[in-house]
Length: 157
Image (cartoon, rainbow, N blue to C red):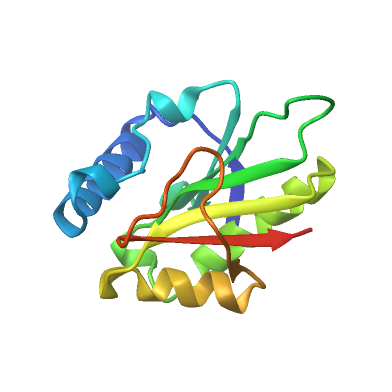
């Protein structure tokens, strides 16, 4: 059974998965278009980080970043660092993680979830996953700018 729990991005196996994720992002996109976070940035108080595990084995990770609200409680969040291990691909881990993050955002009474992903073919499975789960393309958000290498998506909660 796959379980999703809060975890430490600096934990050994997680750190390796995040390093692999960053390496793939820099190998796939121009440096100025890479918005992935490293393990120390994912430890920020504004970010909740989870891992998916089966029998203790890491299968994937994902995070929710609460975006600043000029006044009042936060109402927007951003999905960060969605990644599955090579051995977990095709097993529904990314869908489980995404649904977990969406459920957590709803429990926090957020109104919108946003994300940024790439335009290259490498990112096509991610774009399909998000679209299947109700995300639609939107303009840049939270300080992002138009970029031919980025797709911005949102989900109204």
